Image (cartoon, rainbow, N blue to C red; front, top):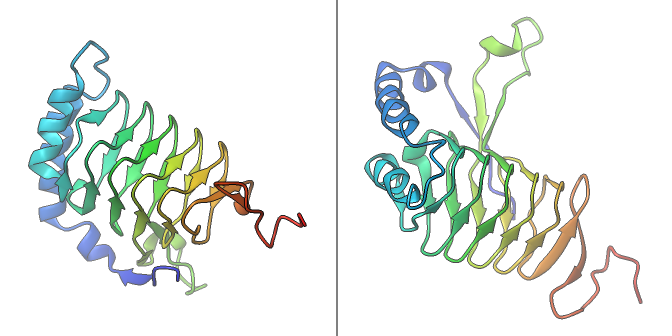
Length: 194
């Protein structure tokens, strides 16, 4: 079942507390964000340990961008590879043993646009958490949208755009991502295979 969206006011997003918290985080994290020397994961981990909701893995590669790190949890032995973008406004939970390939983006919010009389950038936000369960593998250049749960052990093919929940052990590809089969060879009902 897809995670239910909620509204988040612009006042809450742009509060003084958020500006200060993000300012300090970006100042410290920026010192190590693009550092690719051996063991550079350690200072990135230490900065995230100060600001993230929960972080239990040191496998954060260079160039990874975090917004709202205080809403992001990363489990044991998970890897977030080069150039990924994690926007945690609505909350991101990454389980244990997850692999996220380079250039993947995770968005947990959208601009509201219901009021046609107001410009979109002046409306409140719609947020919903993203959950990536234990052992999932996310391919390169994947886009994961708000409210999605990717099940345990699922595989998301490179370049996929995930707009709906993906069941455990499913293999999903495409835009929008659809399940083509399950690990172990079982075909999905959508794949059209016998």
